[in-house]
Image (cartoon, rainbow, N blue to C red; front, side, top):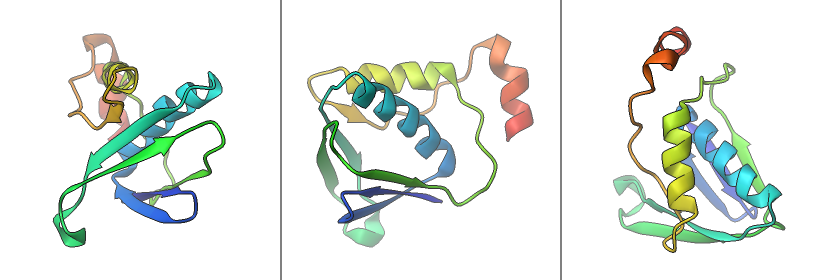
Length: 111
């Protein structure tokens, strides 16, 4: 279980695989100088509910991974997350779609 640390005030647990995908999408938006809302469902252990943060190019974000191996990236999931990030609602976590058939072999090796 990795952690996203935002502005040294907020620590959120995400699975390493999801965190790697979020990092790519968030980094792409920030490189273009784009600000956006990022929302997620809170774990029941922290009271359930939902949290939203305003992410901007001057945000301080740390991605702390539990594992040392870099997860394989699923292009279809990156596209789905990017789609939400570019919507009026902002970035939110969507379930991982199956990778295109061409990526299936590399996907299985990484798991």
